[in-house]
Amino acid sequence: MKSTSSAGRVINKGRARLKLRTRLRAFAHPAPAHPANGALPTLDAAGPVESLPARRTAPGSWTIAPGTGFIDQHPRFLDTSTTAATRSRLNLRHEAIITDNKDVLEGARVLDIASHDARWTYAALRAGASHVTGAEGRPELVAHAEENLQHYGVDPDRYRFIVGDIFTTLDKERPQADVVLCLGFLYHTMRYDDVFHVMSQSNAEFLILDTQVEPSREAILRVRTNGVVGQGSAFTDSPIHTGQVLVGRPSVRALRTMAWVYGYRLDRFSDWSGILEDNPPGRTVKVYRAGARATLRFKRDPSLGTPPEE
Image (cartoon, rainbow, N blue to C red; front, side, top):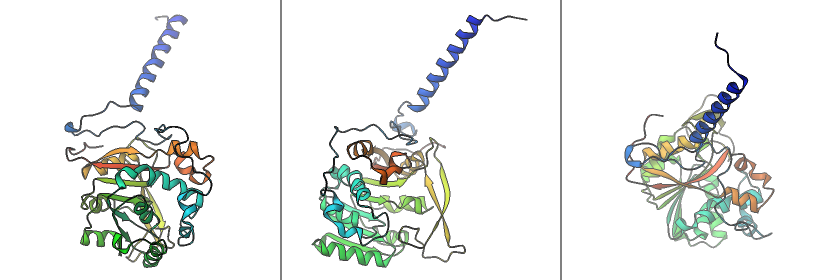
């Protein structure tokens, strides 16, 4: 029987640990793939969002002085919706969704999917969008939306609302846009192919998604259920048996795969690290800090091929 010295065992263990660390580093930061070969692109911290991507702005860039936030200046939106109507949360989400994407919103035609009470429709117009088309399934929310925009003096020529099932109405009307906002909607549905279909047929250059994400490096979807009662629930215009509909929570890699099929690549994450560092404690947006929700921007890229099987 062959003996092994203690020194030899230590060396071998050290080599094993080194190999393991090397493999883990390679897994955490895979080498970028060239789009032409059909492989999925990579982006640092693209999935899972176990921790937020590092801030990309100078400290203090996102500090919101008391009384200066979007909702501070437009408090009517706190009264026209029961969905996450928290002042601090909406102020911070405005920075991630609108301010951090102002470069693509200025002068743009925007399609706002599940436009709710027009809080983000109005925010996009205020950020310089030329026109916003909102699509919303609940008529009472569209009524609130129109009242809100009238209250804040928005020219009626700069917006319109489509009322009804989003998939049916958008597939029929096919509004054209430069930017699509899809905010807080993707985890209230299982119809992902339809979602990306209606977004892509707008011929938008950019898709801005704000959604819950499943923490996994795989392209997976966690199946869940959601009620249909209340403004913050799933929407359905079809009869259901249990009062619940099937919905899903996709991982970031799953979203990247879906977007890739329709010719979009992940452009960047909104700077939630900077926003949270500059505005502590941010308890109302802990879901972003925990990596269970993210704000992502996708850009149309005609050169993309079909992704490989996951």
